[in-house]
Length: 369
Picture 1 (tube, rainbow, N blue to C red):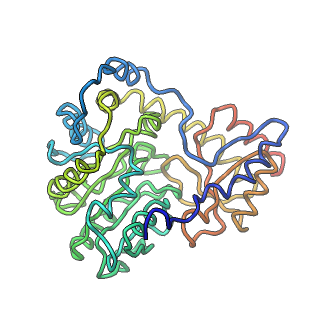
Picture 2 (picture 1 turned 135 degrees about the vertical axis):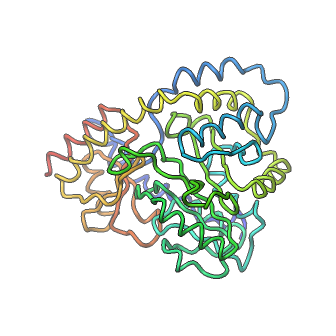
């Protein structure tokens, strides 16, 4: 399979519902895509402006200062001590890495790529792109012998599910038993809402309690798009097994996958400042506090959603029917069909809308509750 064989982009199917929602007299409330709407923090924007004299090619591996900032952040925010420059690597956003990782690891026909049952589509796309077989399975006991790459996603997109240390440890152990690389997509890890994640850090797959203190075979993937409103910067990174990181670095050098130097400087500023992350989390917490009870009063049940940027909701009918019902209220959501075949009655609603729009959605939902 090649790029030309990929199916149509799924979000194109939502366009008719968006038109219905835009017809509402008070305008659309777009809760479909989790694109940040709040300003980029000044500390980050200032660092970007100060680094605009970027006349030389940037380093694919990242500057020493950026690699040190990533390692320090894992220690301070994720409970993963002891990482060095050889353990980390910046990426051009996290989506390109998710989609390209099977290719960069040399996977192909006969290999299996495991991903969650409720899954961001790029895990499946990356497997199919190289002719590997994608398998949706949450239970490590169900992972096939031919598995060569396992994707975890905690907190999950779309469902906001968090894997605790015990679950992560079982996943790491099974991946090592199979000789597979375990890659954990952790882009929403700063956004915990429900106990215990409202009071304690969401663990990484690199947590020593899960890995036994060794990074062998394990990667963590993180993006600054959500915690720092840097989606437009394409600022992300990975960390983990230094041998795998070295292989990926070599491949990325050949492909020219390097972050612009001003973005690298901005990342250093973002990684070193926890205050803006806490402030952004407060904004999302408040929006969630408005939207979640409004959905529940309107007849939706919220599943998982204990962390992350989304509410994973169902009213017991096909997701397209729910999308239509909401579109008539001027509210746009995403259908569960986009996240695998297992959740046809779920919809995903994002917290990334301005306060006024979230309040408008709550008011409209109240009219039918």
